[in-house]
Image (cartoon, rainbow, N blue to C red; front, top):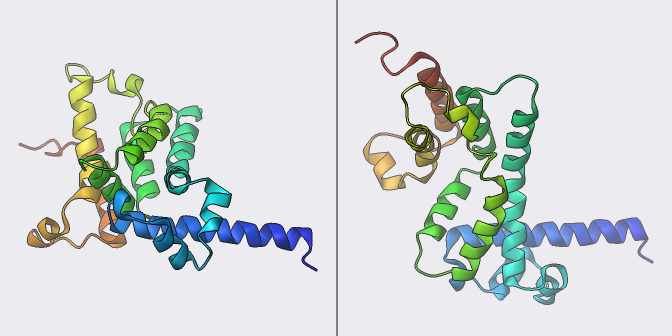
Length: 205
């Protein structure tokens, strides 16, 4: 007879396998083209398990996205609640450390939001990201203390430094001699933080 703890562990494994399979499928193809059969086969479970745990394909999609943005939320919230006032360099560093383990996730979001299809999936993205818009990638208060710099333009500059490296088309990266791997992102994070702290000219012109 299956004991209660082992049954719960088995259920957790099934759920985790489905989320992992969904991530693989959704990041490789358009949301509308991914079927629950495809996901369940990759996870090695019956299709009925998707309805049991998530209700529908959209429910599974939401669970998958939610699981991947939770670390962003936690890091950003902890940084804001810290006794030390966070700097732009802190925000930059936290963002890179959160994204580096799953560098394909920002690319997936970028492609999804630029798609003419997948309306349901886009709705989920907006619903999940709206509550943390003020937490990440940077709070308004931090953007307003930079003299004559327009906070909105400063935000765009930071977004460019933080997000573009993760959504840069791979052929373009290869053309410029970049390999978009963990080592590259770690090095770029240090470089961009130094850029913020020292300025692009480093005091020289």
